[in-house]
Length: 379
Image (cartoon, rainbow, N blue to C red; front, side, top):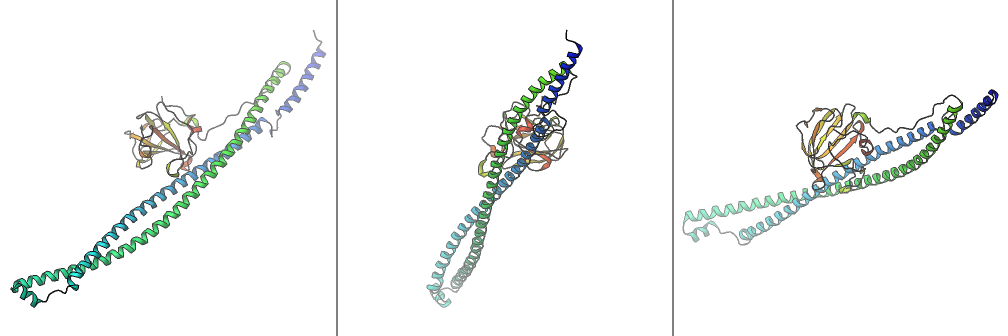
């Protein structure tokens, strides 16, 4: 059996080795680069940068889509103006032809005098009737002249409107291209930042695993020879919104992918996520809140918004139908059925799905995928 002195010397040696190993692992009291606390701070910094970039990306996507909408409106006005202009030109040509025919009949061929009419008809009454007929034709000619003048003025106004519509179209096209370029630049910046963050996170996770392995060995040694020492735990990454307060928006089997920011028709970009489910699958309120903008629009079809008690906005689109609870301004509880999955709006003919967006604080959209994947499903 070892002597007490030998045991004390062994314990002292182990204590010195343990202290040295703890310093090498960054278990000292002052957190910094290379320590677990430093790793947490780095991950938090990267998360904040990505969150800020997501907000900028959402604002750029929203601005681009609005510019595309304005461009389409200007193109509709231009097409309508061109059609009206063509019709006015045709009317003007017909008026000119009619006027020319009457001028030839009345002024080139020289209308007869009343005496000539009397001699020709042989009757005073018939001569008066013929004179009145010629007067009516003359008055009709005056009306045609007035018509021509009015149409010429209308034509000039339409030509000015056409020039204005063309100018508007050029401005909106330039604005749309600028916004698309901004979206592309932000997307490239985001992809680069995310790639760097993932690479850094992979490196830190590898280092953390090795650190935990060595700390576990250190803890075993300390438990065997000294009093126990607490070991730092793992890192928890929180989502953009509190996970416990929200419910997944589709109450049934659903398939989805991280398609936020993907290209859409007409130069738009996806501001939300598509949750594919069978037609008629119930759609529920993700939180306690108030409904607004309940109704139809061309893109979203039957759509609505939920504003929760914290001011966050949630957008639902392409519904097949509403439930009785879906009324403008209605207060709803978390889990209330609002409508049913469909393909209305510009989703007509696509696989039925719910288009869902998240707007923290009522601002621009953020990526829903990393948020809703942690939400519980309606049971």
